[in-house]
Length: 245
Length: 274
Image (cartoon, rainbow over the protein chains, first blue to last red):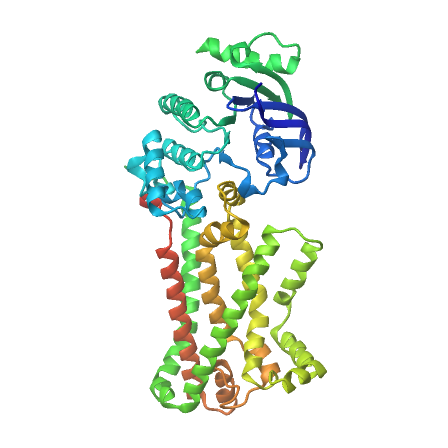
């Protein structure tokens, strides 16, 4: 039997005028799950809800059976990669990557060994002494990934992680993320507005429309017919663009 | 190639003209004091009274700045990063002295510390009224709301998501504060320290109400300016004013130097205009 990593039951949250409505979702251990939706559909809010960012909501979000907000943030064992990567601007790439190890009072040699390992996996050995302000989009993303993965989290959450990358870098990053998934065996939940990306990367895809999770499919079955009109309309836009390409 | 003249050029020209007017005005103010005070400056440094006022001003401003920072950093953190009942009301009460004249603040302090409470403190050995402790208290009370507001703004500007990421990497609230919030507000905090110290050095109204103006006892630099002017000794008054000016200029240069030194590296650093 496959164990559940993330379970969301009847989850609703109101943030200003925006509302996330009655979300039900179950993500299995070691699964790669993509949430696909238009800008403003509530993808990031859903991701932040899984991370336990918000305190006022109805329903429940659990990670391995434990209510996420009952687990202190520092003990949740989640890696979070924001769309703008959220690197600590006052630290070098090396200090960013080894931040979690420093907090855990790991010795210098161990930090160096782990940083070198991450640098090798993600090809960032040449930028370890640089500050985030001097990096390109791809380098920033790989640094953010290295920082999140160095602690080998059981759950990796990524908010539109590839949106600011050029097509060639995107392809490289897809391969690197898959490699990371193989090496670390973590569960990955990421949000995207790119159906192509979702299909390449994810095992299953959830479709968000106006704050509601309207449908969940295996990646291969993404474009099979839906009864919901909003999903059909949303996906037909993608298909039209795909045909143009 | 000929450069086209646009409305933006007029805007730039307008801002430059205004800047020149402000520079002329500020320079005139500074020169008025420096030119009058410089001839008496050497003499002033040999005067025991001026040396006393310099020492007292530096001592009280330093202590009051340390107290302000020790109180303001936790308060600003609580106001920006925690939720508690009546937070908005608390913020208004904390910042209320910002809109009060310093004389009125000094009068309030005088009423409080002349009461039985003040007398009880005095009997325990902590004298406030007509004592240098009163100078420190007046400077603290006047500066605290400013310092809290500056640091609160600095904390608000730190992206809370960075603290969240830091927490997700295992940092406790204290570690998040020490490794993320504080370093990212460092420039603003250092600037606030220097400004609070300079303001403490220049404080007069509340101090006068609480500790009076007694020569060689509660005589700070600003009190020295006031006392000497009141007794017709314009030279000594100008000399004290020049000392204040020199100290203020040094602190301003230090603030700018620290600001430049701590500028984070950016890909935009070589881009001058666009």
